Length: 141
Image 1: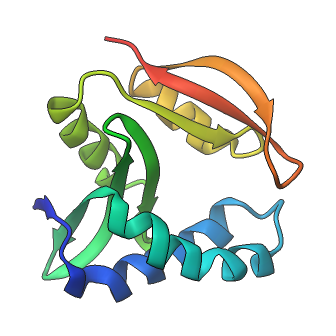
Image 2: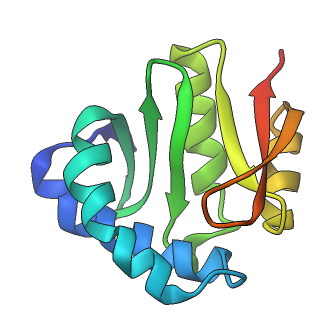
């Protein structure tokens, strides 16, 4: 089941965010993600439109939309990746938002391929504040 995020989901969502960020981005130090924890929790999460994927009364993943059409976050608990959770979340927001964009690190090859399979195309490549390049991608129907 996918439903809108509520405040009581914060701890579960942030645990997924931290665990999945460290797992998917092994080219960045885990300390980087730990330093970003409170920024994500206290600044980005409150201003985003967030949906959670719930199974067996546990949150397995979430997607956050910023500025109406930007996928600011898509994270799935590492033990539930490759089980359709991320695809279900993206398809859910694609029904609500027709024109989605997102950014993904170039080194995160699995995520790039995942997004391409869901219809996203690369618009450009740019360098981030981390010193690592990212692709800006857009959903094309």
